[in-house]
Length: 63
Image (cartoon, rainbow, N blue to C red; front, side, top):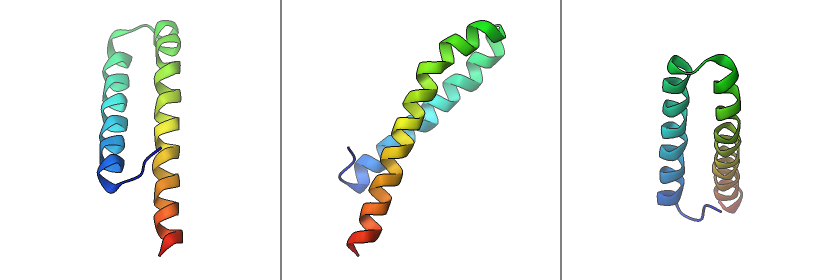
């Protein structure tokens, strides 16, 4: 759970890093291997993005 702006920025950077990994992996792995390998990374991206959105909504609601 994200509780500070700094944690949110770290989460955003993590999402960016994971996306970069996936973009690079697409270039070197066959589609079947990529799909299998990407699934847990995509889930991690979704979870972190959800945490970011929840944090931003909380901040807005608190104002």
